[in-house]
Amino acid sequence: MNILQSSPSVPGGPGTAGMQGVTILGSTGSIGMNALDVLARHPQRFRVTALTANKQVDRMFEQCRHHAPDVAVMRDVRAAGELQRRVEAAGLKVEVLSGENGLARAAALAQSSIVVAAIVGAAGLLPTLEAVRCGKRVLLANKEPLVMSGHILMQEACRSGAELLPVDSEHNAIFQCLPGGYRAGLPIPGLSRILLTCSGGPFRTTPLAELAGVTPEQACAHPRWAMGRKISVDSATLMNKGLEMIEACRLFGVSPQQIEIVIHPQSVIHSLVSYVDGSVLAQLGNPDMRTPIAHALAWPERIDSGVRPLDLVEVARLDFERPDPQRFPCLRLAAEAVRRGGTAPAILNAANEVAVAAFLDEAVGFMDIPRIIEHVLSQVPENEEAKLEVILADDARAREVAQRYIAGHARSPRRGVQ
Image (cartoon, rainbow, N blue to C red):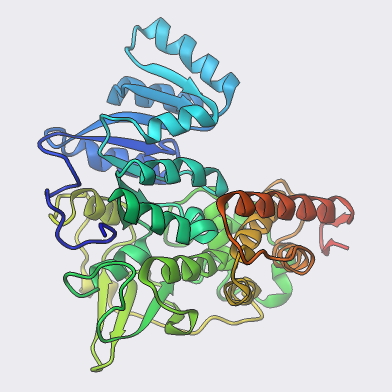
């Protein structure tokens, strides 16, 4: 098994030597741009071979000019047409593709040994799965594929010899704290529990009565991390941490009972692993996604990420607290989805994506997000047999139920859906 393996046959990835080609699925988002920053620091080691995005033509065109990939993919067909016109006018030798087929081709590109999976949401599932099936080193930056179909990804990785390396800062921290020689799917020797840390988001101390009136701009103003809007809202509701709990269960083969979520406002300790002898190992660093990206790109080696070294004297203090279940009901909903099993995590994720999109469009209030998710979980029964086609069908069904619920309830600026 080549998953989370501590000693790959060739340093830097399976079947590679010298310059390594890198595909970035979701290059115009925050993770993608951070990955490009790290890659640009090591031009003798890495080459950008493919970039993908949804609709951000301006940013993609600039990335094509700067990084000269072989392939650029726009999921949106019209955006791909516009990018094609600009690429031709500039005389760039970049093949422009579009749609789901284009994403799959980029994920499977022969000249890429590394694929950074950074497409936000369920849209990243199929291209990530394609990269795994092709035996790539896959840097998992989006948690939805593991949440929705973690068992399928793990099975396919076993079959193909793909490497799954977590880039999510918390799971990368856990990985760094595991015993040498650990292989996914096997018990972690001596493990007692995993402690997932989180900042608590922008509303950690906001009075509960004021949460109903929170605006999208306030929810996206994260106190520690620079992230996309959807992930920022997930961080504000702590659904991000609920999804990470599910992801940790899939990646590290632990039960939800072995995972504790701890609020750590400074965001310096990115997660911890507790062992039966009383030892607790932690990974520390400044809150900058370039650290886990650089770690996964070069693992088991270490390379410069461009991140400022951590100054503990400057940090001065490290605080911890347990999350308030009244303030963060999404944690309970994520735990319920794990307990139900089957396709319940996929249903949870789909409902959350629809609810967050509606909140960002100001169609529902902030505290309506958990209400919508709870409604969908109560209305869409999970399937125990979680084959890919079943997962995708339940994902679609959950989105329909969520959208009908939102459409059928009036929006009040103060009270949300009624």
